[in-house]
Length: 92
Length: 353
Image 1 (cartoon, each protein chain N blue to C red):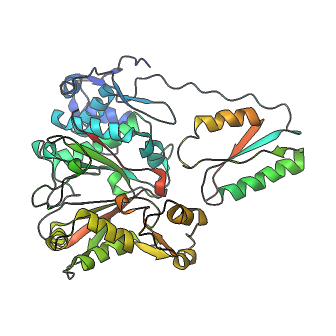
Image 2 (tube, rainbow over the protein chains, first blue to last red; image 1 turned 60 degrees about the vertical axis):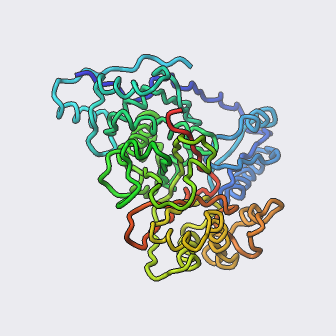
């Protein structure tokens, strides 16, 4: 008996990790807030720790209007130009 | 993007062994599946005029693609007949629209399930149930079309419980959540008409449903009494968000509402007006957010949005109302949206177009 596999036969999207930063000292931080309850508050606290410990600077906060959808590509393109690393996370 | 040839698994020529093999591969929803033998899949695809490699949906986060072929394989496994397949295809064409956000609504702790509402003559042609035991078991088309959607989410899009599907509790609709809109005795225009499709074209509406809330009212005999109980269910503290709503009125309730001349729009306006909670009450349960209140009462606020209250949805049009179920019984239902409020907006597509 021959069965078809029920999985996708399309190619998987290739993804890769960005190379690690050599140092955090003086880096520009981006914050991507996802609109969930307390997300911005939590991320600001995390960002403040980087400022305090590594002399980082925080750029304007980027926001997503939909927590569960990928960030719009223009948001990510702009962030990539403006910051050295980006932090994001859930707050609820 | 070009798709590779579908992979074939050789298994011993024994049906029970093949069923066990499907379990071993992790291809099931926990129930036995029909082994997707080549001949059955080909028969399913024969209903489609497009090539089998046609991509009908793409996962917005992973890029995984759903071809007609993969949809047919999973539809066979779910127990669909070939005539059910166009509904499965149309369902994913609706869910593939960006505002449905099928990644978020199927991955979230909120545990929603895609509710499918089939509207128009095609539902009768394939023997769907719009009547007694509407959401319950017993009808092959309803059960297997909804199940095919779940199997595709699992097998093609890899929404695996505990891994990529993080539902805290899920809901029973995640096995199958598919109904037909009842045409018999329905005093209001069918959904497919209001959606703007040409006469004779049926549609499927996909909605990220967060569960099922029975609305019992055997004593009310005015539209205000019946819909008042529906509005109360819609505004319960556990469910209220800015999200959309689906309300399926039982025929008994519909006779009371429409029998006095109320239109669908009248009912939508009534429900939006009354499905609300005070700001103070929302604060008392810890669910009040300035941002959401401002969204509802800002510059584009609907005229029926009352200051000092949080309504369910942003406007009366956010409430889909139609009729379904058996003739006897004062049991309607409210189906809340996925908990993320505006995170998923219901979508529809024509069937077989």
